[in-house]
Length: 417
Image (tube, rainbow, N blue to C red):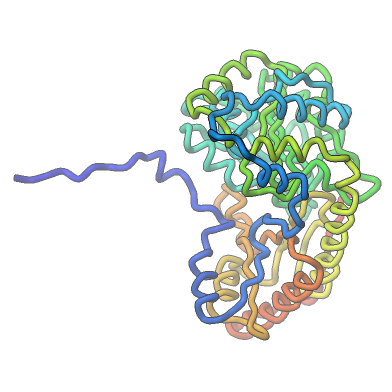
């Protein structure tokens, strides 16, 4: 008797591998050879998790670890609403849904506004997992190309409108931005607001790096601050980076649109609830004094400046000086950045150490864009970060000698006006 093999979904094949984690097996092999790997590939801060957060985990002493309400523990929803109010954003606890990390918040948002075949517009390069989340619901991310040569500036209103079609449902952006460090200014947000109102689109804003802006002339503005957008705006947030609590897996989705929140409630009920103890820890985080952020911001500013100065010493690099978050996209003097990232893990070490990078091409969906770029996450303390940047410089020399390539003759850093 002949048996048929079961088949897999096309949707699963459409989900890309993460450029942040895809080289992990090579890093594991390097560690197996005794090489220490300095991770600049992933946004995992080494900042200490705040004591109130850890104390909340340690002090949990209920007899039963029970489900929470599907939309989250009321006390946490109240704390997040109060946090936004301190930031000048007027929301009520009923506008806030607690999610399993910011990832689930994005997935819920896309699921609420998109049917299979619908499109979401995102400026490119973008956070790579947006493509995966869209593919999971058989929707599609449509890239709006921006160029490193132009400092990743948002294209004009007219140019963006050319990408809007009958299946377009939403514009999605992140500010401060992963992977570029860009912070959207008021003019850019006004462009997005006008397009969403004109074409009846949702505006989904990922604001997980809100606190991390490093230059006095740069101002943050929330999507919920934009006028006449109550029915359009959906805000994505998370404790992961804000409170150095990535493993807590607590995020939130906030919207004043009652119909969107009703659908989010359905999705939340289907997956039962977010982590109960993680919510108690997140509540402790959001109740901390806002002065907590100032020394953290200053530390990330020092790290950013160290990376910028290190790259300026490397001939042939091109980058935009990041204004926020803790990432930088850089063009390196190589033709294939993923090949170079593999070389770092398989063929290079200095003083027993090497560096892991995230290849830039994974942050683009347009074919062949970003091939000579990498994303650098400056999440290591300055001593280790300086080591990593020296290793990067030495590895580029070794790689270009090994491959017969020659670095360009000068280094350049592009700043936005």
